[in-house]
Image (cartoon, rainbow, N blue to C red; front, side, top):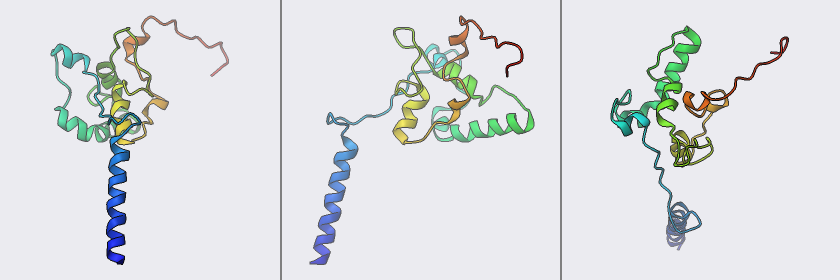
Length: 145
């Protein structure tokens, strides 16, 4: 009897988890679909690594680049977060860049799906450098840091 109750409980738990994972309140599952990179869309240049490698290793590359930059003072463009953002964060149809919390932001689209917290953007910009070209620089009064 105990065996059947355990088996029944496991089957019920499995069925419930399938319903919870598959549904988002509308009976549809959500799969990330990050926007195409600017350069990939133009097919002028390729990413620094093949797509399957970047999907698997980008976190390691970014951390390695961060360590080289912060601890050794070595700055390169390969595996640079700024370069990734410049290429991969693209404007929508209205010419606006998505907020980092949005599923339309290149980074957040997959990180939200994988339940991985993004902490890069506490310091780094979430939009490409070109998004800031027409902004007036903020000048702090002397004596303020």
